[in-house]
Length: 383
Image (cartoon, rainbow, N blue to C red):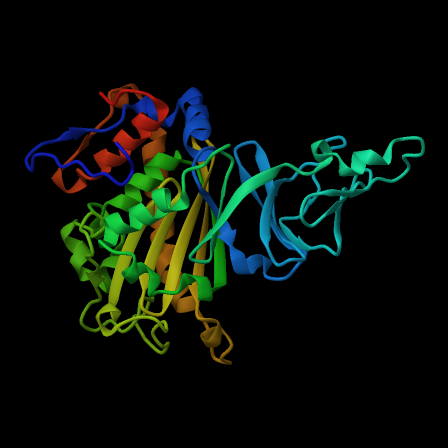
C-alpha cells in the first residue's frame, strides 16, 4: 500500500497494532533507517535559512551528516559533510556562512560552493589534475525545495517529489490549492524549540494522527478547538478542519488575537485549524496567522529528536510589538504533553504484557494504514 492509499475497516472492529518489538528492536530501527529515511525525501529545514551565497546549515540522517549551502549562482545544493582527503567534517557548526570556499578545518583542502575541489595546499610533486578529478569533489545529495521547505534524499534515484509529498496533500485536502494558500515559502521562523524525546518515532507519529487522547491530556488545545473534545480529530477527513471555539480569536494560549491573517488565505480559512501528517517525518499545523512545522529526526529505536518551528509573516515579525510567545506557548504545552505520553508508552513496549501489541478502537482505525505502510516499506508482514 502506498502512503497515500487509505484502507477502511469495519466500524465496530478492534484492529491490532504493531507488536511491541517494532518499537524496541534495533534491527528493525536500522531497517527503517535504510528502507524509509534513507530512501524518502527528508525535510531538513527552510530555504530562507540559507538565503545568501555562502550561507549553510547542516542536517543529520542516520550516520550521514549533510551540508545544505547556497552557491554563488544562488542555487541551493546539498553534499555529504565529509572532506575527501581524510574524512573530516567540513562544516563543524550547525549553521554559518563561508566566503568563496569551504575549507576543511583539518588540512585546509578547499571546496568551491558547488562542491568541486578548488585547491589543495602543500602538494609539491603531486599532479594538479587531482583538483579536477571528480573523485575528490564532495559527494552530492539530492535536494528539492517544496513550499519553502528543504527536502533531501540519500537515495540513488528518489521518487519524484510530487509522488511522495503532493499526493499526501491531495489525500488530506482533496486539492493542492488549500495548502498553497498559506504561502509557507514566504514565512520565516520566529521561534524554534528542540525536544529530545525518549520514545520510538512511530509512537510520536501515531499520537499526532489521533485525538482520542485530546480531552484527557490537552486541556489548552481542546479549549481552543472544542471539536476535539469528542476524541475524533480531522486528519483522516478529507478537507476537514477544526473550528476555533466561540470566544477564541487566535490559536494561542489566551485565545487573544491581534495579528492579521496570512496574505493568501480566504474568509473560510479564518478561525480554522488544519493538521497534516506528511510521511515519513513531518507534521504541519495550519492556522490563520501562522504555521507550525514539526520535523522528526530518529536517533535510535527509543529516542527521537523533534524540531518544532513557528513561522510567521516577515512583515508581522518586523512590527515593534511583535511577540509570538502566546502562540508558541500553546503548542509548546501540546508538544510536552504528547511527548510525555509517547515516553509512557515506550516504557512498556518491551514488556511481556505488550509483546503481542495492542489495539486501535474505531476512531483510531486510520492509524492502521500507517502501520501497513511501515511493514510494506520493510518487506514485513503486519499480522
